[in-house]
Image 1 (cartoon, rainbow, N blue to C red):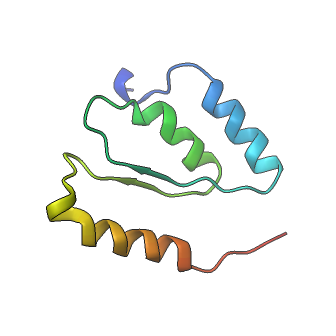
Image 2 (cartoon, one colour):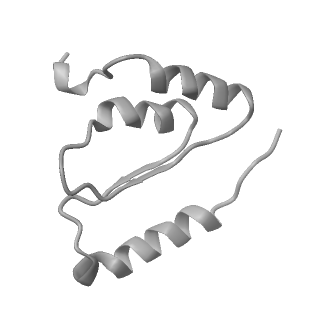
Length: 82
């Protein structure tokens, strides 16, 4: 396994366990302008059945509509409660 794809530390994994036990799903929208350890932070979304959206080299002028559409789609999709 590529070490860049392995989460570093277990904080987000423990947080994901707590969120999942409470029935909370976490989604991540990332627009990094510098390095982002998405393998570590992304574990939170992956383990809680959330989504991860990554906009590499995000620029508001060219990607604002795409971001808006993706956020609306994410927020308006059906949710199921226990």
